[in-house]
Amino acid sequence: MDDGEAIRVDGVYKDFMLPHERVHSLKSAFTGVLKGKKGRTVERQHALENISFTIKKGEFFGIVGRNGSGKSTLLKIIAQIYKPTKGKISVNGRLIPFIELGVGFNPELTGRENVYLSASLMGFSKKEIDKMYQEIVDFAELEKFMDQKLKNYSSGMQVRLGFSIATRAQGDILLIDEVLAVGDADFQRKCYDYFRNLKRLKKTVVFVSHDMNAIREYCDRAVLVEKSKLIETGNSSDVSIAYTKMFADETTNKDKSSDGDRWGDGFIKYTDIALSNHVLKDSDETIILSLSAKAKKIVDVPIFGFVVKDAGGKEVLGTNNSIRKKPIEQVEAGGVVEVTWKIPNIFADGTHTI
Image 1: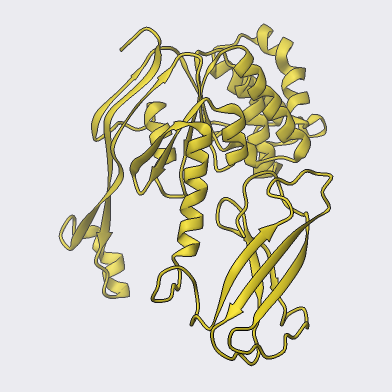
Image 2 (image 1 turned 30 degrees about the vertical axis):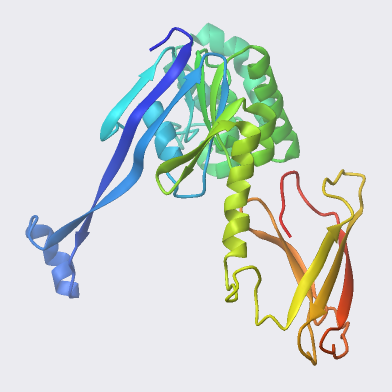
């Protein structure tokens, strides 16, 4: 391992063995525990297959992929929570995992007591915790709740407290797994400010996220994991485009007609699609979608519509002229229809597809 490398992942595989019990009746469900291995089947799940890459010291490195792709398993192997089935992980420096924040908290203790418990397990003395306590509380925005038992906290409050404590840890390499999904906009802004500070300090950060905007802004390089395999490695912009394209391709490939370039029966085909803006700013109130379509045959009641999806493939909004009660008259063979949609700008930061 070179001195300039923080992490090397070399040919890593990870399998999980999933046992299945054959249960044919209620009685067998109760007696099955006495049968031992007889009647059991075991399924091998391939969580990761032949993953290799290196992360340089001081690099902000992203890991992206859909749910179930294996990215969180990969992060836990780097954190040495899991051992690889095959392959090797080399780490040059002290790791601080921001994974499953709040694990180890005692629900019967107050928030204040859990701060002292968790920070002491991280190696801080009581005197050091006394000095950092108020900063931890202020960052988590939980001043009014610190003397309540943790079992009365919401899951989001617990993660915020865990994240705030974890930011005090001193380490060379930070592993961060989707912690920005909790809290309101102000708390998420604090998290992003913390990330910017990590970049200024040249800390090595491994960041798992579905937020391609954050990946592009913070990460120097990234990898894309899909169905347990590494399918893309490169700069963060290229990898985020590849991630988004997976969902666009998946949508385009659904219900194609025989010629493979459109949906439907082919009686009407779009000839032109145009957007007023390809990049929206907060000040842009609307986006104009202009469509032209040509009919090959007579169509009595044509319906035109659109759907907007985010980078994760989730539908954000959509409608059609039938829903809007804007009927279009019969279109003759060879006839051209032009449709314009005025779409409100309700979109969050990130890449969307229409």
